[in-house]
Image (cartoon, rainbow, N blue to C red; front, side, top):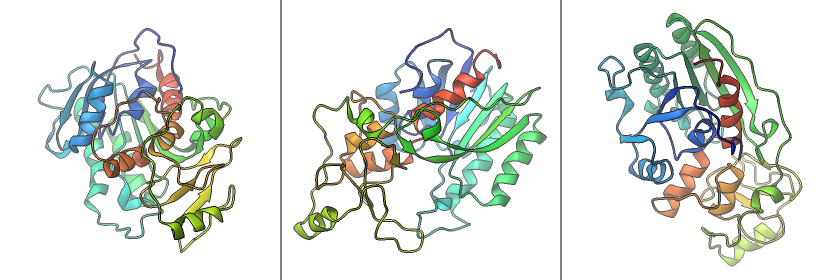
Length: 305
């Protein structure tokens, strides 16, 4: 995972819509993450179990305010407001999905807290009008805003996960971090001694998995892709919910395990997960690769304090 070496803190950070803690894994070597907020209990429990130094709250960010002194003196605000309403593989995509409103709520909190910088990450499929609204909100609040698409594999991750990244800094433009070599599936799985979270498939499903093609999606219907076999010496495609899509093990006739999917996202084998397997599968699928988060954090550390 990116950022295993800890440096002197470059300031304090509040994380909105914090997820299971993958963004924190990238930022915590460089910044003190003092607040984290999410609405789902299994997410809050997972984050708290792995980041005990952070005050984790189970709250809806629509009910929070940066004007009441709850988040005083933050150097940065980071987060990934839920984006399923704009996900390319979401077959029930809806422009009016209430989860899309949370990007605006995130920017409201940035405006109220007035940190030195903010970082928002989301899927590339967010509609242009919503992207432009986020950028305008940041500029209106006094930030120099950069909006880019980054592939996590270009920043050391073991998957080709593309994200829309928005960075706003007071007084200067963000310098995009230099790319680095991707990890491979083999390297990501190296720390797993005993995989957990194995899927149980029927014989007819196993027969389908046996016909999976290395590095090639099959079973494509519109934007929905149902099966791909991973390759040992390449990064994986973007990790998805293993309860819905088959990412077949490079050698074995089975879906990869939850522990293997977590490893592709940059989580360590020792990471503690709370909730049932369906909830864990969704938390892993929603994660921002820790290596990409670490590259962004490193590009801000020491320059935005």
